[in-house]
Image (cartoon, rainbow, N blue to C red; front, side, top):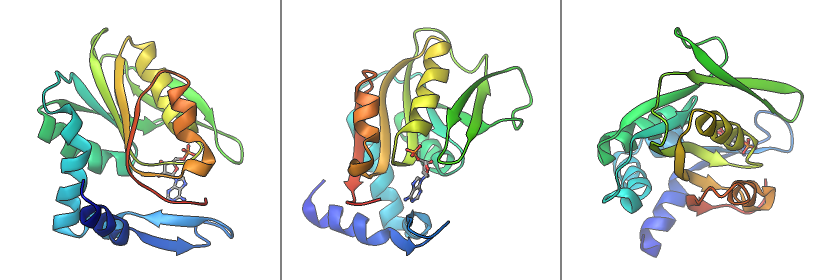
Length: 181
Ligand code: AMP
């Protein structure tokens, strides 16, 4: 991506201080999604490294990962898998617990969503501590997926999420990085 496109993407992301609580600078991608050229650019750049690869499925993490992951899946010619908060999927699921800042949460996917050995791309809007993406990696690998990469529009490198995934041998691709939390 050239530097003008990169700058345009950065500018399209709205920063909301003290949301959802004091001290958090929320990186709001609704402004990017609502801007057609920027949405197209983000999806094109997330998809570009995989143009010549055989992707079995793209897995997106609820909820913003559904919007981006669905568009990337369409572009790379793969099916889409939703990774959801617990209790939302109707068929037989596999579940993993993961820690949030306060307490635990759980995410699920359908047990029959992938075939063992499939190449899967994982997509979310943002990686911070990496706890959410790590849980998704565990779910997918538990069903035999080979994770080609985890892809994000935004990385907050100071929070160490990319390093955490790389330590699990998951390559990480992100489009823009912001300093701080
Ligand atoms: P983490 O598990 O710490 O990597 O957090 C990643 C998840 O939390 C992603 O699904 C993000 O959408 C959300 N998230 C964490 N921090 C922020 C932030 N500063 N702005 C927007 N979303 C965030």
